[in-house]
Image (cartoon, rainbow, N blue to C red):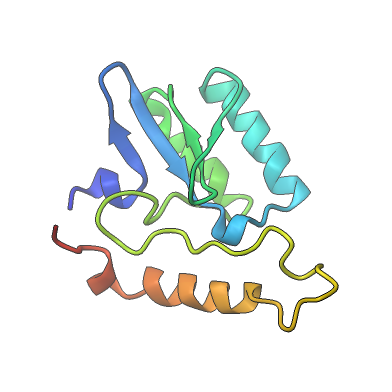
Length: 128
C-alpha cells in the first residue's frame, strides 16, 4: 500500500483529500479547536464527518499535508490507518460512557483495539 494511503491521503480528481482519525468518535474541545484552525488555514474552512467518524478535508494542498500532520500531532491526533485496506477507525455508540442504562463503557476497549491494530503492521496491508 502506498505511504500516502497509510497516512490518510487520497489523490482525487481535483485535489488531494486527507482523512483525520477521531478514535471512537471522541474529541476533546482543544482538538476540535485545532481542527477548526486547520480547516481555516489549509482547507476551505470546513471538514466532513465520515461514516467511521473521521474528519475529511477535501482541498488541502499536497505540499502542506506534512504541516497539517505536524499540527495534528500537537493535539495527539493523526491520520494513520484512515484509508486503504486496513483496520480502520473503531467506532462506538455516541452516548458511550454517559448512557444511564449502559452496562460497561466500551471506549477503553475501543482504545485497546485502536492501539493494537495501529501497532501491528500486518493489519495495515490487507489485500482485496
